[in-house]
Image (cartoon, each protein chain N blue to C red):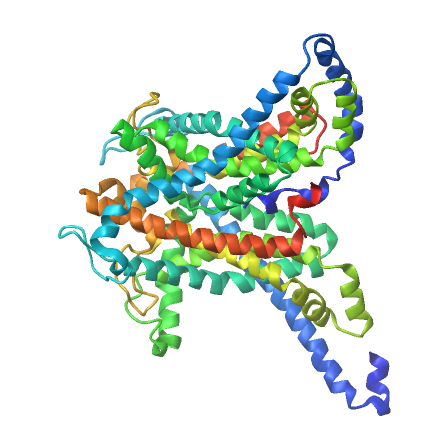
Length: 346
Length: 294
């Protein structure tokens, strides 16, 4: 998430050299004096290296701790339900019957819906900023798109409740129901609070991720690919399609999967508009429930070991899915943009 | 192109060229349309935020604690301070570890183990915040037997670390090797070189990374739901449940009361303004303090 926001191209390596020579070398010299005379840095070096190694290991340990706690504490639920946990459709805390199917379904459908909306828009924006728009517009445009990423999830949710949902229930859903109601995906009362609302707000939230990565990937497509296509008489769009997009496929795919990873784990905005009912319905107008939102709603009120552990098992499943998705995305993006990521510097 | 259409020998080519040109225009139009569609929500969100928020912010909102349901007035002062408190805890826990790990990766991490940490940090970055909340609950809340500001701080710190680690590493790697060698040549020990030369040169970049991480967790709600938990009253004790601005916004937004909705908008505006101000202030300070890479 952080990497696309960093102004990497604006930071050529040579620049710090000049600045440093002027501003901090005298200082460094002054501070270094005692070390030149006093005890050498042998011991200090060892202490420092070990401390930094500990910090590095802490990152590893954190991930280990996450896995350990999730596996340990989801044990009771695992023993009680086994694999059937994810096939069960009943979520009945009172009788301690737990099936996570509606949550898995809700997470998958809302995320895929979000991708369906976000992917064409993000790629369009990325193509426009890198290939079509005047140079002067490039910076501001990507800044504004990335500003979307800076809005906290709860603010998206707030906006969705009071602006998006009324628009959906008054205009969009009645319209969809009239025109596409026969498909079965758009039927039922248009309350606004629905799977559709969750998908749309998720789409808005993942657009900055997908589009900034797509932009990064498009920018590293060699210029001569474009020139070759144009020289063969291609129009601008043909040049983009053949010379640019085709070359960037793997990286764009990585960006999409990264967006998917974000959508799967997104909690607050979805919880606020999806309706939070553990049911599986074909219609996108019906309320749903996602893995993340059941955790948000029920975790702090869960009574009983099995209930709590069932929720933690949902957390574990969510964790595993997002890890696989993210690892896949990283690999795809890495192969395209950085060649060999930071190893190139080593 | 005009010549080809007039040239009778190439007459068959002409309609294709026209179709291709039309396609080109359509795709350009489509790209512009996507930009408009993407920027529309951004504009809508900010416009609505300012429109609803500005009208709702008043002195009471910024200085008072919440009133019981049904009573008008009251504010989110305790939540604003609580958020700052939890964020301070998270920064104290997360920043040193993140920067340290970044230093390790940049200065000692060109090996298999470094790659493992690098990959772990990226994976950790993608873990849903609600899952991190569960883990902080399991580690801190279950041990202490009650919700606390500390638990919230731990959750947010875990979220800050990977971002800080990776940006610190990237920034340190931008510092030219010659600079390190010059320091070694003067007989300065390696650790001192790293701290006073390398890290110092990259300060502005490293701080930008820290601010990115800070801005990201400042608006987080999910990991605080069952760690800091929220509180209707003032609290500045590490071991007590603490109010946080995002939590308060969430609770008020899903409530059925108009007065609370109004305050949720005000809270959202305050949250965004605080995040932007904090980031801008630090960037400004860094830019003035050292030469600016940020």
